[in-house]
Amino acid sequence: MEEKSMKESLLAKEIEHNTVTNVHQRVTWDVFGLEMRRICHIAGPMVAVISSQYLLQVVSIMIVGHLGELYLSGAALAISLATVTGFSFLMGMASGLETICGQAYGAQQYQKIGMQTYTAIFSLILVCLPLSLLWINMENILVFVGQDPLIAHEAGEFTIWLLPALFAYAILQPLVRYFQIQSLLLPMLISSCVTLCIHVPLCWALVFKTGLNNVGGALAISISIWSNVIFLGLYMRYSHACAKTRAPISVELFHGIGEFFHFAIPSAVMTCLEWWSFELLILLSGLLPNPQLETSVLSVCLNTISTLFTIPFGIGASASTRVSNELGAGNPHGARVAVLAAMSLAAIETSIVSGTLFACRNVYGYIFSNDKEVVDYVTVMAPLVCLSVILDNIQGVLNGIGRGCGWQHIGVYVNLGAFYLCGIPVAASLAFWLKLGGKGLWIGIQSGAFVQCVLLSIITSCINWEQQAIMAKKRLFDGQFSADNRLVSESHV
Image (cartoon, rainbow, N blue to C red; front, side, top):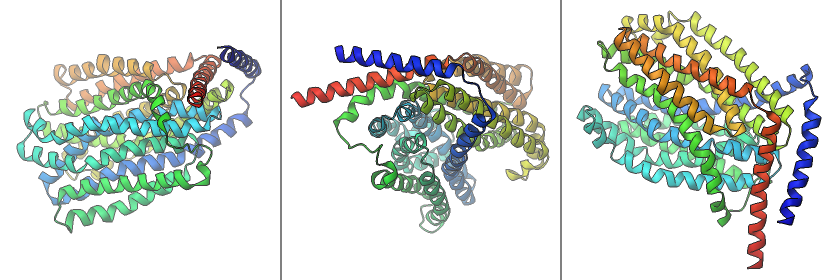
């Protein structure tokens, strides 16, 4: 206890010194420019990495679609459900590492990074076990909820062949966070891009040349994700760049499970609540008077913003990395500058992307369909999609800042209130009561996104960065003290 009190006293003095030093600092153009370069250095590769991983599924759907409408419907439905019930949950849980490992890296607790990565992999593999049971019974579930038996059968088979991808994803996402928080971006970038390039011919061969048909697309996704995992795992194990954060696998990985789930569960819920609200939008569109047209147009809009969201997600990952590193290092001023730089980059990016999309509003619908009715409807929806791009950029970066600070639990309440108490009810009212159809659904869900952005902006503007740095240091100190006690106990035994 005396040792802990002494360490706490030293910690308090260090934080007080850093706080006094940083309070009087001002954001100069030189400091801002340097931080902007740091943000861009992380954001650019992360956008490419996230896009490459997302395109694995898109490529498989496109290739399977050439087999016929039934196979296309089954594959699209299977991947959508797999994302909702599995991939999004694992990605959200792995985001908890952005708080734990990001702050540990800033505090130079390098061994904790490797050990928490192992803890996350072990924990997510355990989570995959109940998820795999759900996936195995997907065909029966779809038939039970009224889906066409033929489509349900194809979707069920496709999902079963995706099971290896589920477990690979449980390993891949912690590895991505491991490299991300250290700004080791080149290995991820090379691995993801090479995997995507190999995936295209691999998927084509498995679908058309082996007799596997649509399930060949699922098998290709599984092989591609496992290839990515193997490459990153080998790089982590043998590269000199990972030497200081590479920890030996031991029973200590079980000691961090509680801390991991403390951040992982709110991260997962925060992510899934938002993703599920848009999936619910597609389901509601099937109840409108012209369901085929409405569902097709909303699917085009959703695919558009899902693809473009990889950009703010990458910027958000960059913001999370920089904020968590600076807070772990006890530098609240640096975290504040990182937030300013990330939001500035998001503003520049959203102006370019939304402006380009609006300028192409009359033609971009042809990317998805040759049906003039669908294309004309997409043109009408284009301004709303541009608004979605703007809101996605804001909330994507703000969510990243939240993960860097470690207040994912606040994000849960924000998303729950914004989308399920505001967005979905407004969408249903506009679509069915005021007869605005798909346009009403989209306006409603964007009202929820607007509320989300307002709430997150208020929370971020009210952050006491000095207090956040103190909390980060105390969290890391407590964890280090507990680890030291365990080592002492084990040595006595």
